[in-house]
Image: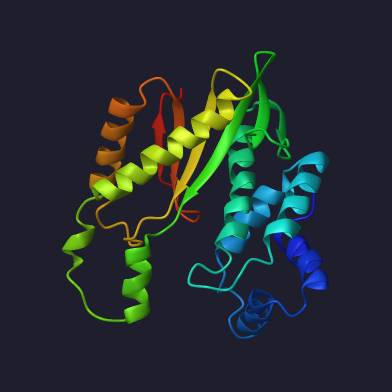
Length: 230
């Protein structure tokens, strides 16, 4: 299947003057390895089946022209994260994995797959850095790094509501399935990851004991927090 670069080439034909397209073109001409996440998405997109590629491409064309702002092309890259979940499911040797188009007027999970002949579903969610972190980055001022020592109650509330929404989308089609959440912490250095991992594991055990959840930390790293998953 085509990969990330082929998808971007399609989008560039339709949106040649898009600010992100121009920025990537200029940056890559000077710093060819400035987008390391490209290799991650490239590998994931290339293993999609042909129908899933068409689904993702259609959705990508819909969301790509989003407004310019502090979060850039977040919506577009959050969509591509569906391919990362597809890649995970394929790595579990599951069968008939398919990306799904939304069903009108119905909550729709992102992916279907088979387990022992039964159709199950996966919903993919992304939690990005907080508005507070974007403000700190924009201000460019020094601040006390102790704010990163542990995850805030606000973050855990956000994680909880994200999982609840994902569970509702899955249950509209099936009693159970997999929730795949990609999390971008404010502390991108992950100095305090051990604390974060413990907090999230305890939170999931307490709040969602019956759900199957994968929390993937960022796109580039290899940290996974598995809950209720063999």
